Length: 325
Image 1 (cartoon, rainbow, N blue to C red):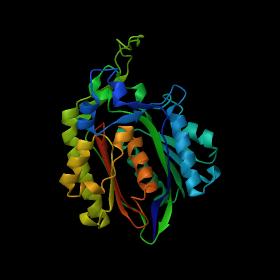
Image 2 (spheres, helix red, strand yellow):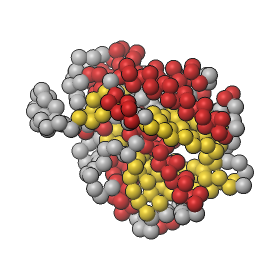
Image 3 (tube, rainbow, N blue to C red):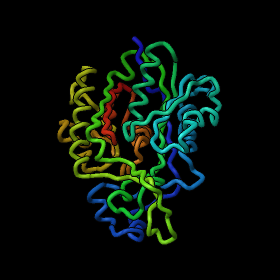
């Protein structure tokens, strides 16, 4: 029996690190305050020449290399992003050109921090239908362009990066066994990008150019915990996998307190959750993709592991997949 599965992973993070100690000099905050409330110690910030499409391309190339696949073999490219280089062309089309995947269909999906799993689930349906045999899935975001660097409640949270995977066919019960995507538009006001009249950013950073992120953290926290715990339970039930049979959970890296609360509510030991938020902060759609890459690299995920990928994002949107590696 064949299932659609993840054949390889890749990633790309900018070289520049912005630490909590450096942020102390920019806004009224402290390393202790940030670490205690979020679990973040540093994040990566892309330079002006490091566009979303460049990060996406590098991650995609690594995933293709790790899959032993030539770019001309790729049949579908989906990029999950809410911070594209421009309104159009899509980041996926820019990636297609950059990697040389000239035969591939290409488009973007916009599902905020849930974008990577939305893209994986979408691509899986194309493969199951027989329309395509493989897909390159990339999540890439450059949120540093959307952050108000005067707002200490949000500027400490986000970073830039990209991750990717190649989807293809797996046998013997391996692959993506269950999927879940969900939306609750009634909560759209909890996190959004403000597009009011643009204001120039002066040399003293006294004003913030728009658009920029607005977030109501306390309300979002509650919805995040519930939606992610529900996602874990739903895909485990659909896959016929008991909660104690889950070997690793790769959650959205938004806040370590959220992850701890999800672990408790889902009834899974926190030790089974892979966490790398301390190094990268919240990289939006890229967060799970980068975490999945590192979990594989560090041996936390092995052949036969039952892995749950679970996330939430602005919208509000949530998603989960259960994968037998």
